[in-house]
Length: 248
Ligand code: PEP
Image 1: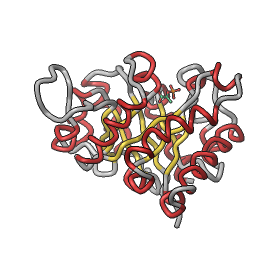
Image 2: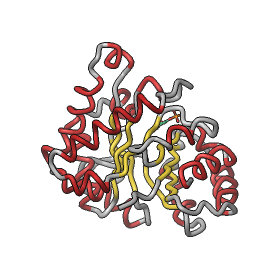
Image 3: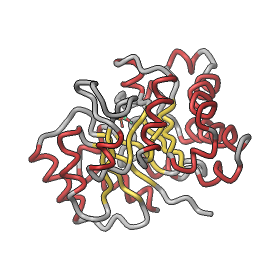
């Protein structure tokens, strides 16, 4: 069964109301057929996405690891679902590094998202030091197994994985299609070790300095099913070109 390509734009902590309105109006004019497109703005602008033209889906950049309650400043998975959000990014390297989210926290958030009917976009990735030390597969396996051990491979039928080498995020350094493909194949094989049907249907996105001019070569690799896009998702023409590259 062919996997439908998916491109998710992670605005991080960027944008304003007017930017959101302009960008969403610009994207609404594009056909963007043959690719699922998810926009992950900061929380205050999620409503602009859920209210936008039909083919754009809304994703959050973060979610609380707990259910509703006395957790000032947090946003629960149930709230996100209630607002029409369908996806949530979990385990992004910026959350892991800057907000001390460990594998256990990531597994908690994954569960909250799924319990609320959201699709987690589970990010995995090694640092430059880990890659140069030959530890890429060990790091990816540890991050993946933290979720598999708690929730099982079957849960990945309702999830998306994003391979995001930390050294490629926001640095302008992109993994080569060969480097990315090798890790994507490793992830798929590891999942297949538990459930080969789920592994075959699992969408594995690549993230890390994807731009309009390198998207096609990355997305041409057999185990790369789209992208998680940071910087280039803030520009209509670039993001639309990346979506078109995924569709093709
Ligand atoms: C990201 O933050 O998920 C990301 C991939 O960023 P960039 O595309 O800017 O490297």
